[in-house]
Length: 179
Image 1 (cartoon, one colour):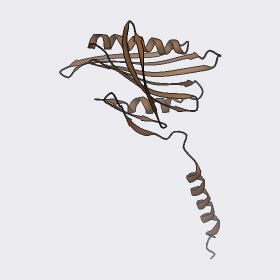
Image 2 (cartoon, helix red, strand yellow; image 1 turned 180 degrees about the vertical axis):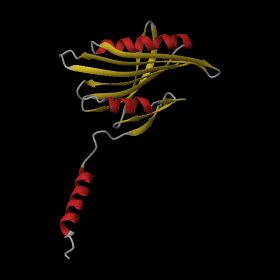
Image 3 (cartoon, rainbow, N blue to C red; image 1 turned 90 degrees about the horizontal axis):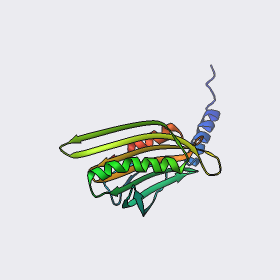
Image 4 (spheres, rainbow, N blue to C red; image 1 turned 45 degrees about the horizontal axis):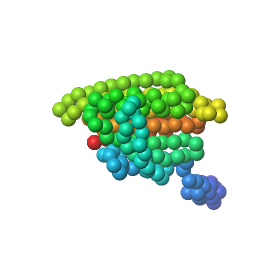
């Protein structure tokens, strides 16, 4: 009885290991914590953080954005503090509307929720929208907008409709935790 040759099997395994080791993953998920706000999230690449003034239906706030880009897809978390909880809840709609307009979009799905308890009040809006860029390329937006007392957060994935997978968008959005 002959034993099976081991050289070709070992060679194939070695090649497979070397090939896997040489591949760099497109999505290199890493936990990131907010610098100016209390949250954590998984981002698919090394992020950049910046702050800018924005107008949310007449209320001027400084929004801090932490974002990572993979190809033409953007994964971002924005955070800001508003004067009171009522303005924070109202800001959710303003953020959603601005981002949908940014892609000349139409909302495909939307879900809202609100909770009031001893820790305060919170509300959220989840949205999926489709639209197009100025040059006519199909775009998709997955957004999760949250208010917690005076704090607001926008957690978004935006990019070419064919490139943004629902799985990656859900991984990113579900990883978002605020304290």
